[in-house]
Image (tube, rainbow, N blue to C red; front, top):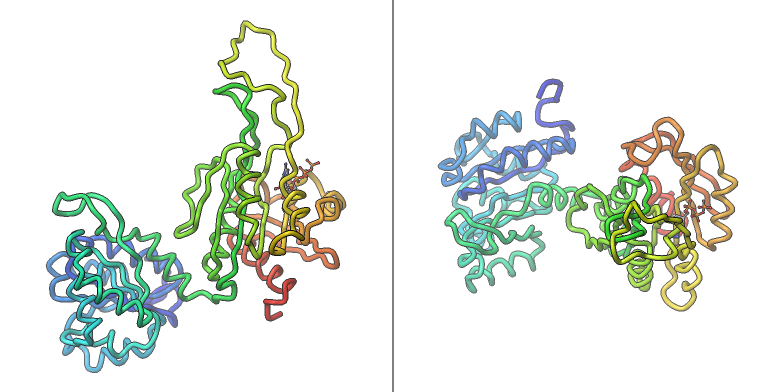
Length: 405
Ligand code: CTP
């Protein structure tokens, strides 16, 4: 916590985290830490039942803010907290608290703040599956959601009681993603975005394949950025060790043929297509169904794979017309090659990067890019791939007339 300003990374922006009485309360300190790592301060409010599961002290230490649970602990705290918070998260949210919210009962500090708060509210229910499926509760939850409360639905798994079912609180990652998406600009809301990412594998026999060094980091950063800005994102990913971004449709593929099928299908009704995948350019002419033996003599003949980007571009006229962006990973300052690809593939934009440059490259967490459109060229200096992804979408929105500058 050293070096953090009081109240979180950005002292001005904070959320109220309501913690209610469920065993999942033990995850609350992790959630506080994740939110603060995203530069958002956290002020925790607990119910009496929550204090049976976790101490206020633990949450006070990780949030670096006073933890409240009583209306009379600090005068007018419900009005002060509700007035300035950017959002409220209730995690875990019990059946009891959710039901009180939906019937306007304000009998403790948390329910009182909820009634006084006019900003976005996110709830992460946690309870036994029978309770979650109770028809009376379902009605209450549906009513709340109809009033704009955002649910991060619970997950299936083994519950505290030992039973299996849907009732486990959503992961910290999913709750954080929902918060960031809720607080995000929303400037891509409703847009359907298809991003391809990672390498492909072209099999020689069942155990050997040709691939490349792509890590998928840039493609995953693009998918996450679009999702946080409100887009409906499909990520088509070749094999990678990365965890997929939260709450995004992920289609896993292995070969260039699999990627081709998925990209063509998903591009049919996309508004934006970004081909960040490093598709293998060649595949073995023949696939050996049995493992090749080292005792056999062996010559590898290769055939070209289909240029997926050129194919998506050529089918544009028949369906919706997406804005199509490609990536050109080159060795050396070969913007000329990137520009040539922009024209030969018939796309709208190409992002050039020299994979040998400092701060760029396949497994790097940063990138240095030049965005080339038919009329323009913009330089994106070295920055984390997530920030670079945001810059790329800023330019795409401007090019498509949706951006403000
Ligand atoms: N690409 C594609 N299908 C392929 C190969 C590449 O859709 N079979 C896409 C990549 O996803 C990228 C763009 O085309 O967005 C440029 O890829 P790149 O490998 O730089 O260029 P190539 O077209 O493969 O040309 P070259 O190998 O000659 O550089």
